[in-house]
Image 1 (tube, rainbow, N blue to C red):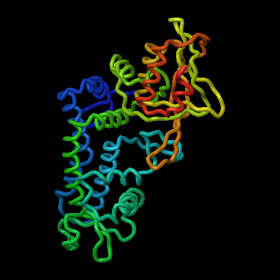
Image 2 (tube, rainbow, N blue to C red; image 1 turned 90 degrees about the vertical axis):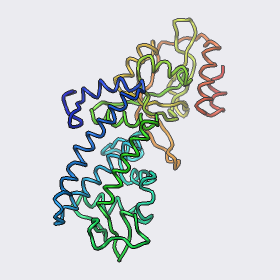
Image 3 (tube, one colour; image 1 turned 135 degrees about the vertical axis):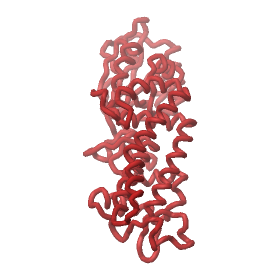
Length: 364
């Protein structure tokens, strides 16, 4: 990793790694610095070049350049808002919860943000991706009958479309690049404010800057006593690890059992291959470099193993993705302690795992 690479005008990968360690304290000073870095990247890579082009004010086709930069900025902002990382050449069913391969879905979700909700006609929300975004990115032109206009155009909206940056009028779909840019700037101001108050948004922010810095992430599958939030959070805090995401998942063709040998003479939870069975649990997202340290301190006697995890999207679509978990080959026939079993059961119910699964496999 080259720590000298700049991820904004005056901020390097090394600077981000150093700042990242401080963000878990949630101090205003550290987060003010993080927002400053975000502003620096947005301004130097997008807004400053756009405003330099606008300043020329010649109206000889530069609207395409302004719009193209604005659209790229919009996708950048949408990824921060939703906490998504683009992954190429991946089957749609093999995407992890924090990944996307189709920008169209992300834009559809992003338009629900209050700043955008009323500033484009409802029939234009679906057209934006194909006619504007893909048209400019792939063919350097708008598609269909969409046209780019400015505040100085003679095609400004009538009373019905007033205040909208994308609307249908006069037999064409008109995209006001000036109003769109102002809306993006309004969104950025709103985002900064929400970021200071929203812990979930902060985790998505860290995820995206990790990606800009070239840091890898893994999903850690949890099926045992770490299901208990109090226990897991205490352990994560001890190692200054921030869980950047959490998803309820299943691991197919495995079965949970209490057969891992422990130094205290009891057995701990373990999973074994068993065709047709499944293990329920959660997966949390963390830096790939953090999991070995977590295992060395809290999962002694287990080895890190690769698994395929399954989860359901909001539309009930089942997806699978690669994760890591801990499995032990150091086995025992001793019983687990009642206290340990209670921790797992309490954590499983806390995570709303199926009661039938809890009664059949976790209670002993």
